[in-house]
Length: 415
Image (tube, rainbow, N blue to C red; front, side, top):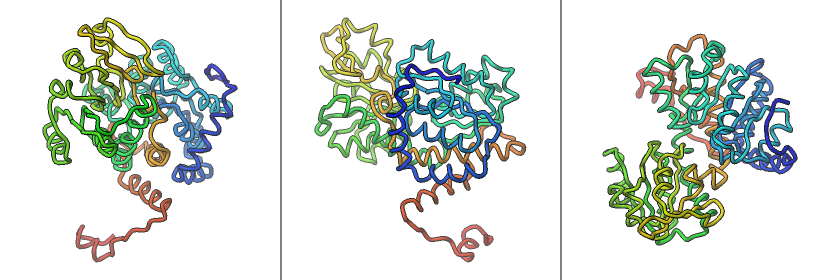
């Protein structure tokens, strides 16, 4: 078995986790049943890099049920759950990941899944797509295409396409309505605070929370902070989003002005160097920082480590940094994704929608590869709506449909 994990004896615990999420993911269950019959990926190898926890594991099993030979790694060194990885290995899938990998190990694992010569890539942040283009150009003709899960990854894809470097079609899964409207807003909103609360064991009510970035993830994190009783400040670089935040009832200001006020800081921008030395030195004693953007570059961890006169473990997954002015600030999960590196990630019901989009988008691209001309492809509306209808049925909700007359009124012709 070409798989690398530290301990395969954890698999029973992982199986329990996967069984739990499966029981709460009716969309993927229905797709698994369908794929088991139709085998849309028969004879195909899929390389997947997504945060390797129970919900991702079930997606991998659904794709395998569709005939795919799976090669799996994690998309973050701290979000892999070893017992879940062990369960996948025990079930015969190829896994190259463990919790707490070094940068060198993380790269080696990423290379192992690419070296399997995949026909399809499912990516979270763009690491697989970037690596195969940069270091394995001889494998590019073998790739039918892929799916990208995140805003960060889509930004990388757009940059590659603009430079003429992208060589196979990608589905922009994050841009699907059934992904970003729910995963980014409600999933991130809940899981960020789950990670913060379980790690710090501190009250949020009455505190001041600074949310950097007011995209869909920022909206969700701000909404949940407000619901927990916090006073919320939003920082933004986009004037339209800044106005949205104001009209949603939040205070908007520059980070340097918010720095002295915040008790909790959450970055969700997709950019780098959002909180830097200038802001660190203005924070008050005990301020807590964390990141919910894909990469650990939003809170300037390198700058903070260089600036600090002392650092120490303050609590499991929390490091304290004492600054030259004597103030100590705290960082959760080394500035990596707080909802996964310090929590269990998005709720199962939310990832059920996101991974349904992933699975059906992969199926669509596989079936339509000869007619797809664009390198960057929005998820077809029929796929988005199919997921929405499946979700409504799972909730025992029925909605109206347009009559022929109404359709003609709105669109000019009847269906």
